[in-house]
Length: 294
Ligand code: KIV
View 1 (cartoon, protein in one colour):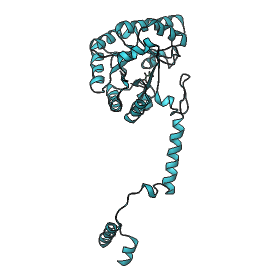
View 2 (tube, protein in one colour; view 1 turned 135 degrees about the vertical axis):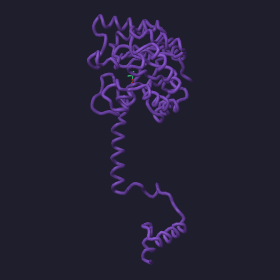
View 3 (tube, rainbow, N blue to C red; view 1 turned 60 degrees about the vertical axis):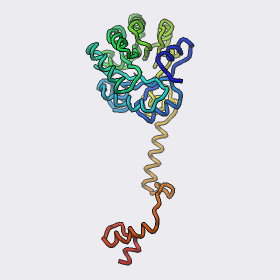
View 4 (cartoon, rainbow, N blue to C red; view 1 turned 120 degrees about the vertical axis):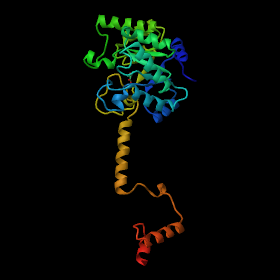
């Protein structure tokens, strides 16, 4: 079944959970498509997972377009959302609509996601008026890391909790068709999910949300070291990749790879002629027997 804005909203009404993963390349997109996941987010997390930055702030609209267009070529039924990177919509409503348009036209996304609540409702309204579906993102908004003073759970005191509820209502009223809740306490996220008519997609926001999103390298266990509390490793692909890389290295060095079955064959007659000609010209391709004869 093709996933669309309306089918995702219908899933909330039917009480069916929505699955979403980040993705940044064609071959992973094909695997996710074949797995039946409902939606993909080409997140600005690609700045950290694919480009090695320490946060998402340096990511550009061109970076997202490059990755989103690659992902789109691997998809058929999965809904594709592109993240609006830092300073691509905060600067003005005009910039917001122009950059959202680029993500649709050049990145082939079906919707855009932007961070912020009540402070970005003008941008959300304008993008929606341009017929571009918007996913909002509230709670922990990583583009505000410098203002927040780090990656911290949001909404733990009364003021901040009420602010997040207000943000959720504001983005829904502005026309967002879905909203991401990041690092919000479970009970608060559940309350918001019950209050809103649009689906909530949680990351570190508990099971009361209408769906879940994870960074795919996190859930596959591709990064060793730090594991956020809300991440579950569904596989240990990082260890498996390292094992395969090490085995390849050892087999290249021991000459076990490539083996007979990996080699291409040539007619002995053709090869004899190649050896004869190259040995005449004194080229290093000459076979042992030809060299002896010379
Ligand atoms: O950029 C991203 O991957 C995100 C998810 C963490 C929701 O915004």
